Amino acid sequence: MTREIRFNAFDMACVGHIQQGLWTHPRDRSTDYANLDHWVQLARTLEAGLFDGLFLADVLGVYDVYEDSPAASLRNAVQVPLLDPLALVPAMAQATTHLGFGVTCNLAYETPFLFARRMATLDHLTQGRIGWNIVTGYLDSAARAMGLDAQMAHDDRYDLADEYMQVVYALWEGGWRDDAVLRDRARGIYTDPSRVRAVRHAGKQYRIDAVPLWEPSPQRTPVLYQAGSSDRGRAFAAQHAECVFANGSTRANVRRIVDDLRRRAGTRPIQVFVGATLVVAETEAAAREKLEDYRRHASVEGALAHAAASLGIDFARFGMDEPVEAGNSQAIRSNIDAIAAQLGKGWTKRQLIDRFILGSRQAPIVGSAQQVAEALIAWVDEADVDGFNLSRTVMPECLEDVIRLVIPELQARGRYKTGYAAGSYRQKLFGRGDRLPPDHPAAAARWQA
Ligand SMILES: Cc1cc2nc3c(=O)[nH]c(=O)nc-3n(C[C@H](O)[C@H](O)[C@H](O)COP(=O)(O)O)c2cc1C
Image: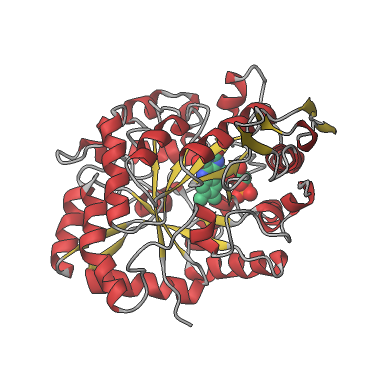
């Protein structure tokens, strides 16, 4: 089966996202992250490359697990300083027509009503191009910032998210009937009040009694992403997610996760995006040279600070050749599983550091345009994924290289679109309309005429 490969740019409103240290490269522009032109230009570049979306990560706390301090993260700009990703979207939407925006928002510290309103606003302002990466966080530093002692336990966070989803589905789908808005100037009736109702919920974590303030937006519920593929994470994804962002690790490991995810989701389609980093040039030799040039700017300390927080393991506590014990980590278990899949059980800090090539755990795919295109096709075919979330290296040239070199190779092989489909983000991804289909749990919250 040949399917078209989808690309999201994977980014974050910060300097050091995944590949730590590369901001020190003389050509890198990620230090412009606080300038709106930077994001508008990025959006235009992605649309020129027919990317499906810009996927924005986010966290609500500093990375302070390594050496029990935020010092290494601050020194290396490891996801700090960091701005609010949602605020970037309207300007990028104004500059583009088709690009989707998958934005990470942590539900754990925000009432469903306020969050649902903000997303509905963005769905209106982007004309149906907003998506939400549903996360509950993995940082105690975020919990402390919100006045708590520590974050909820790993599986409990997913239970919280399940209830949160019920409430936001009701707010997005169940308050206003499709025919509620009349906008009837002659009779002076904007909304028919008999077609709007309060959303009421009294559950374990949330209580609400509210008429949603916003009129129905094109997609109502944003395109739902989820990232986190522990057993509990997969159960959650199979129920709610339309798109899943999985760690790279190995093709066989990702295939195992994807098979399980698709089995659990049954007939409901899920698009899986896998994380990837590409270093491409006209020839393999030139790509290897570029890698060496980039590599001189990578930061091992930054990579350790990043890994420590996302795995929930302070590497400063382990000797170089001592097996690293994840213990009862409450952070991203699928990251821990991905490392074990790559390095084997009993992996050590030295082995992990040896894997840091561009200042992250994610090994880049390096080569000529043909080689990279073939590697991506092999990933899609062998791991049964739909596309890639491409991490940035040196910005913006890393994306310009992909657009100039890799995309034409994929197009020549019939594996990349040559134009955008019409419609909302959901319509472009699934070709089945702007709204969630009837087999999605959100549909149960609908109020139809
Ligand atoms: C590839 C990937 C990307 C993620 N991105 C984020 C993110 O940007 N912000 C966040 O708070 N959590 C993020 N997470 C964490 C998960 O969404 C999740 O809340 C979690 O920590 C539990 O994941 P698990 O089921 O894999 O253990 C990410 C996880 C993965 C695997």
